[in-house]
Structures are given as structure tokens and as C-alpha cells.
Length: 197
Image (cartoon, rainbow, N blue to C red; front, side, top):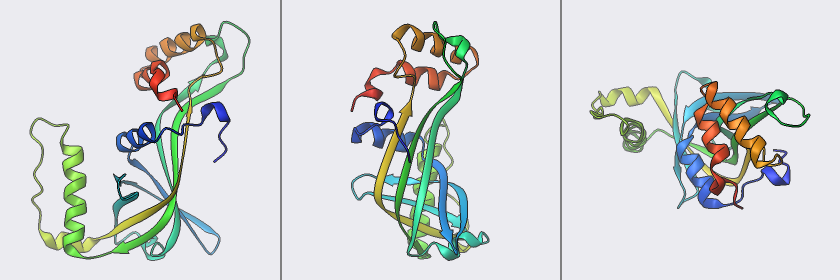
């Protein structure tokens, strides 16, 4: 991924937090010069430097993933930025936050491992509800999925949040984003700790 130096994030704590908060993304692989992508949520294990997920067995993508090199793209909030939002002449652009992860993928079908993956994903995303769903399903349903584990080779992180603009213009852009309903991106622009390297 091309990253201008002033948009590159290298602080591991910031990157790891971003991955945990934006763990739904695209898994991309190439087979016989044909790229294939599947959207899915991931579990990130920073200690072991891995991502875990599962894919529907009916999705033939899994058949080319064992021992495959893969790219995972996780995006955060993003939006169009109008030149009219600056105090000085500028050009249209797009603000965004993204992580690109490369690694080696392996597949698994062990029922216990699949159940653990499904349960961990459920617990992570059900935690936001007052009455979270408890994993209760027929274990035979696990036959319909294939587990994925990615050993991470590299992580690249870019936050393009108008770092080259004045504080006044960055705040003006943030206010316009809020008016459009994109408070997540506005908050990211105002959060100075996210821009430390």
C-alpha cells in the first residue's frame, strides 16, 4: 500500500486498537492470476500475531486458501472532503483510516476449533447488547463452515485525516463531517493520540 509518510501510523498500540475495533473486512487471494475477495469478521490475536475467521463451505474461495498468501483490508470511517471546507484554495480529497495485513492462510475443520471460533466471534459482537445471545446451535451446523487462521507477515496502517492542514481547517472539516452524520471520522480527526508515531 502506498502511504505518504505523514499518514503512516507505526505505533503498535494504535494499530492493534484499530484492528480490534474495525475487524470486519475483505480477505483477498489470487489463484491463477484471478483475484478473489470475501467479506468476513476476524478475531485478532496480537500476542500470537494471527487472525482467525470462518467462511461458508459453499463459498469456493476456501478451496484455494490453504497455504495461500492473503491480503486482509480493514477500513475505518471514511468520507469525501470538499475543497469548500478549507479557508484556502484546495482540491477534493477523501479522508480515511485503513489497515492492510498480509499473511499466510491455513484452513481447519476440527469441530472444537470451529466452535471456539464461532463462540469467540459471537461473544465479541454480542457484548454490545444488554441481553447478549448465548451460543446455542446444533453443532452439526459447524459442518457448513471452514475455519481460517492467518499468520501475519506484515501490517501497514494509514490514517489520512488532513494532517497537512491547519488546526482551524481540520476542525472546520470535522464540523462539516458531523453535519453529514460522520461523527466517527470527525472524532478521529480530533483525536491527537491517533496521529502519534
